[in-house]
Structures are given as C-alpha cells and as structure tokens.
Amino acid sequence: MNNKSVFPAILFASTAVFIIILNVWLRSPQDNYSVLSLSIILLFSRNNMNYGAQLMFFAAAVLFTGVLLFPLKQITPLIALIAVIQYASVYLLTMPFLSHIAGIEERKAGLGENKRLLEAGKQDSLDGAMLKDDLLEKQIKDIRSLYDAAKELGSSLNHDETMELTTAVLKKIIRNNFKISPDDITFMIIFKKEYEYYIAQSFGYDEESIRDNEKTFVNAILKSVGKSQEYIYIQDTSKIPGDAGLTMELNKCVIYIPFYVKNKLLGVLFISGSKINMFDEKQIESIRMLSNQIAISLEKVHLYEEVEKLSETDSLTGLYVHRYFQDKLENEIKRTQRYGGTLSLVLGDIDHFKVINDTYGHLAGDYILKTIAVILKNHTSIMDSVARYGGEEFVIILPDTDKEKAHAKAVKIRKEIEKYPFKYKEIQIKITMSMGVAAYPLDADARRTLIDKADKALYRAKEEGRNRVIRAE
Image (cartoon, rainbow, N blue to C red; front, side, top):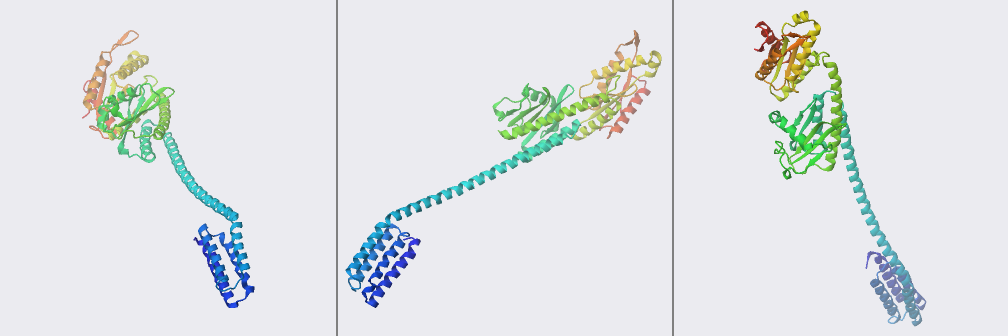
C-alpha cells in the first residue's frame, strides 16, 4: 500500500466502524442504508490503490456487510444483496476508469523520465556550451595575443630591435599561449643581410657554440628547408638522419618555418622541442601566422634599411658615410658586450693625398678614392663594415676579430694598395696607405675611446714613415 492509499484506508475503516457502532446503538432498520456509503468510499479509494489493496478493501467491505447482516441482524437481506451488487458494480464499472488512470500514471511517469532526460540533456548542452565558450574565449585570447605580437613587431624599423622583439614575442607566445616552459624550447632566427644568411637571434643555445658553428648551423637549416615555402614539422627526429651539427639533446622534434616575401627567402625560424610531437596543429598554425608577421616586419625593416642605405652611402665611393659608421660601431660594441668576444677597428689614411690632388687634379683624386674603396670591399667579408671616414680617410669595423687578426688583415690590404697599378690618363701614380688598429675591449671600453686609440695608432704610423700598420698600445 502506497502513501496515496493511506487516507482512503483510514476513511474507509473509520466509516465502517462508525456504521457498526451506529447500527449497534440504534438497532433500527432505517439505518441499514448507511452501509451503502461504503461503496462511495470504495469508489473514492480506488483511484489511489494498487490492485492488491483494492481486493483487500472489497473483501473488507463484504466482511463488514456480513457482520452487520448476520450476527447483529441490523440490515435486511435485500439491503445486503443491494450492497453486494453495488460493490460489484462499483468494482466493474470503475475498471475502465482505473485502467485509464493507470495509463495516465504511466504516461506521467514517462513524462517524468522525459523531463529528467531533458534536464540531463539541458545540463549536458549547458556544459558543452560552457566548454565551447571557454574554447572560444581561449581562441580569442590567442588571436588577441597574436594581434598584439604582430602590432609589437611592426613598431620597429631597426633590424636588431626587431630581432630582439621577435625573440621576446616568441618566448611569450610559447609560455602563455602554448603553456610550454621556455626550458623545453630552443630556437634560432636565420636572416639574410645583403648577400649572406646568418643567425640573427637564438634562444636556448650556448652562445659560444653558436659563434663557433654559425655557418654549419645556417647551412644545415637552409638545406633542410630547401625551396619549400611551407613550414616543415618533424615530430620525431630520431626517425631521420642527423642534421649536421643540429642533432642536440633538446632536438626531439623540430619546426622549420621559412620567411618568404614575394618569393624571396628572407630567413628561417628554426624551433626545436625537448619532447617528441610537442606541438599540435593549432600551435603550428599560430607559429606560422606569427612567422608571416615576422617576415613582413623583416621585409619592412629591409626596405627601410635599403632607403637608409641610399642616404648613408657615399655617392663617390659607395662606402658608408661617417654617420652610419658611428651608429654601426655603437651597435657592434653593444653586440660584443652582449655576446662576448672582440671587436677591432682599422683606421686608414692615404699617404700624401693632398699632393696627389694638387699634382694630378681632383678627378685623379676621385679615381684613387673609388679604386681604394673597391680594394677595401674586396678584401673584407660581408660581416665587416667599410666606411669613408672623411676626405681621404677610411675605416673598417671587424666584428668578432681580435687585434692580431685585424692587424694581419690591414697589412694585407696595405700591401694590395701598394702594389696596385693606379693609372689615371696613362699616368702611373704610386699610392700607399697608413693604418692604425685598435680592439674592443682590449684597448678601449667605449666607441669614442676606441676611435681615439685607432686614430693615435694611425698618427704613429704617419710619424714613423707612412705606408705601415701600427697597433694601438
């Protein structure tokens, strides 16, 4: 018996007891009809009883009718018969209604289950929507980070500053967006300047190793990229042959992303990770998008530097002008401070140039200046910087070169100038040059003092007879 049948059961029992007491007390036949009220109670009760409870109540009704009829003689046989017939009628006539009610209850239970399923589905949908919102929010955050990074990269027109910004942005994206520790990542940025590729920036590598093996690293990276304009992702480097000097402890997976602008390879971003298959597709796509911006920024810097170069080169000799030399020397000193090593400076002056101008004319002097500029450029590397210091003076910046090597190179240039057959309008002109060599940080701790040391060494060369190279003391 469920909770719904408790009240009808109490009502039925109370009514039955009341009828018995009433009939015993009154002992009057006119109260015989009160037993018929049991059928009304039964009709009311059936809606809330299960099948077993209904049978029990009908049996109880018949029993009470019998009790009232036979032992106490309080009701007539006709009334008892009518009561039994009424009980049976109530039972039979209410069966369709009860069946309908049972169907309603079943549908109600089904609706309850559907409601539960809908609530569960609603919660699942809500959880899914929240998950999508979180993913969308993360994507928006990542896109915003990339946008901010691109904006930051586009703020500089200086090559070295752009490289430093690129390194900072890459570290920030890897740490914040990819949730990868910088300790698990190394990368190099290979960049083309004029006619040669070099390592513009690196992270996670030993600087001494970079300095000693720069050409090996650059050649290996360029060889791996080949002519591909798309990124190359090698998920497991153990499955491929070693990359000539690049197979280091951290290189479990590598990414090569070339910087192309108008089918011109400006450089390559090389990233390696400490775990196999460290990067997923979205991370690769983010790096590729960022690399496009890096390429655009590098191209912008390159074009800007080309324009600057036009204003920073001497129209007669094609060498850098004095202002450019000063800026370049300052930057090279800062670079040497940051990475270590030695920087050398060679300052040269054409011997007796005023006499040559006075004797052969200024056009002959121009010819000699242009010819010496060619000799200087032919005997220096792409990493060296040759400038016209002023008048008949020239200066050479030699990065990563100690004083002894710089002195040897200057002696070689001096000899080339001495033996060169200068000829102007069929007139053979003998030309020599005196030079002074100074090194940073051995001889000086700043740009001005370094120039002063080289200038004093040049002055000594002039005093000691010209056509010679003197090292700073």
